[in-house]
Amino acid sequence: MAQSATLPLATQALPEELKLAQEAMFFPEVQEMLKALSKYNLGIYMPHTHDEKTGSFQPLPSGITQVEDGLKVSFVPEQDCVAENGRSFVPVGWVYDPAAITTYGAAVVAMKCTSRCTWQGSMHTTGHDSSIQQDTKQNDSDG
Image (cartoon, rainbow, N blue to C red; front, side):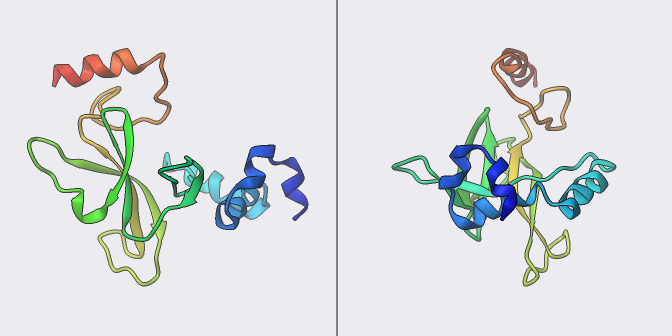
């Protein structure tokens, strides 16, 4: 695809499924989808995991959920995302699965944050970085 020339060099080594996702961000129809989603404070993300040995990007396997807990990301089986000990999960990323029948129709939750991820109130907000981790930790200890 002609768009791949504009991608950073590091994306050239991605698996084909993830390379397609990177290239698709340049397509006009995907830009239109992004614009439409933004009206609902939603965006687009690339579902992925990392190889445990090399750290390289891999497609997110079916049945695995990316979980943020205490500012750390892990990849766990969906059935392990169980609310317990005052910890609950807020869905923050979805993928389409036409075979799935879920609360969200054919959308399957692929990414969740624990409820204690409470920067700026109880809602999860993207953009965690080192400059806000201290505030986040203070919020965690407050609740």
